[in-house]
Length: 302
Image 1 (tube, rainbow, N blue to C red):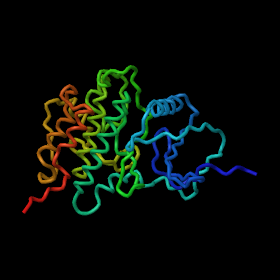
Image 2 (image 1 turned 90 degrees about the vertical axis):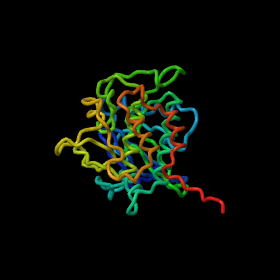
Image 3 (image 1 turned 180 degrees about the vertical axis):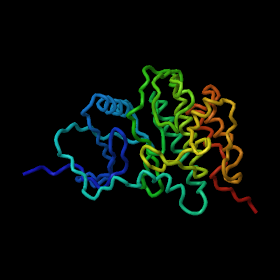
Image 4 (image 1 turned 120 degrees about the horizontal axis):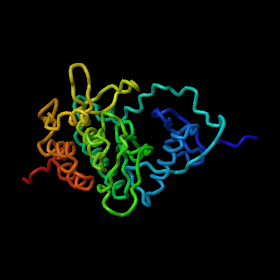
């Protein structure tokens, strides 16, 4: 008699170059989890799987906005059977975008909540000497377990765990990696620090507030992200800044009433061409708590 499987696969959440993420239920507890399946048939995939495992294992404490590693299973054969009605064209990777786009106008309070949660998650990772290196909307999951939406930073396949206990921003990296539309200018050059994560967050925050999306030509997915238009061509912001470091960013891009001045200034500081002038994760965490955007106005006493 075959043993009952531990997880029951519900649907596909996202599909990338190196793996597929499914929403699943733990049969024993009925808890919802994310199951990531990676084919380790080539050395490159094995390295990515181990890199993600080491990054998540290195975290001593849990953070509510960082996905938690429950276990790693190595198996062979065709034991893993997702449900047959699972669609390869699942729109669930747009959950963050769809949540931000509900209604006729952006929800400033919800956007503010997402920005606070994401900045807290990245500050937590950097305190634990982990640089994500592939922050993008497709790597951010949404959980509704406690009623209000909670973001979960996921996919640590390209992350790096820095050795030592010094400032994470002192470590330099040379291998250009990540997704083009979220890469900082210095990543394109192949010499960067943890502040590249802040640039990627700046892209996400700006796009979130102004509902800016683009269609990824390779995956045909609609993603949350900003860009520069050159004719009919969309150029990643980091690449455009590398070509023209003095380029002035039009923030806000669409509606002058969509953001207060302190949020515009924050985004400029996150997207600074020079990483030395860019905020680090710890400064960002403080600044996010100070901006007026998305906060309820206090009624004056009568």
